[in-house]
Amino acid sequence: MTTRVGNLAEVRSSYEVLLSDVWGVVHNGVNAHPRACQALAAAREAGLLVVLITNSPRRWMSVVAQMRSLGVPDETYDRIVTSGDVTRHLIEEGPKRIFFIGAERELELFADLDVELVGEDEAEVVVCTSPFNDEVEGPDDYRDLLGRLRQRNLPFVCANPDMVVERGHRLVYCAGALAKAYADLGGRTLIAGKPHPPIYEAALAEMADAGRNVEKQSILAIGDGLLTDVRGAQDFGVDLLYVANGIHASHYTSATGDVDPDRMQAYLDEHGAKPKFWIPDLV
Image 1: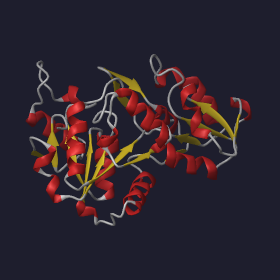
Image 2: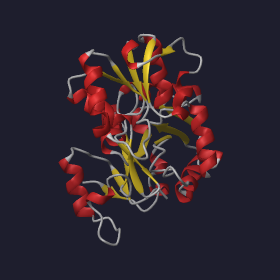
Image 3: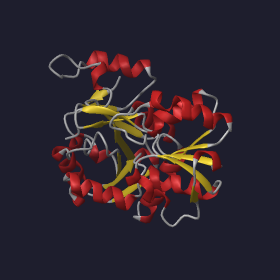
Image 4: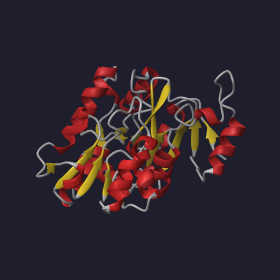
């Protein structure tokens, strides 16, 4: 049974490192969550190392700039690990002629890499950061394109494994949804972000670089996504604080927006999710 906590301070003394998700915990893509930022900053003041671990397809410097623009104070965290950064290693190791699926703002993923962006017919590999226009597009809009790519058996590198994220008060599709559609066609996908090991190995490296060579029982992950944050933490072998009012909230909240603990527990059990703690919102 997952234990409810009233705030992060109740449990943080048992840990040395917090491994916190960003989108859905620290901000919603439009505005920062001030109380979450304050909770993480207070943990830092209490001596914990706060590492943000995000499936953003951007490099960490771009995530810093984005968070500042949304009002997330720099004092919220110590280090950042992004899916974009670990995906760059996959890109470096793969074919050089790339067909890119994503928004123009995400092209900085390829900065300083020895690759060539080409058309669909010339490509040796696909790299996807998001739909071209995630405001209006989803997997169904890519059925024909993904079918053609699958016919050529091109590997599909997914820079953001999230299926959806909250943007304000609505959900938008991410690259993970397109990767799943490609895999459903029998295509080969390569993914380094949550819940896959490379991003957690990168987080461990950041901890070590910060002088924290800790055992896994001293790490508490924080997140709201079952397929990414929860599964990733479980596979990595660390405790997790589940933020219930995230992307899955509609499955167990009442008409007034309150979390129904029994419905939430049933939903977690249905998906094999076993967070140690839960909290409606990070505070």
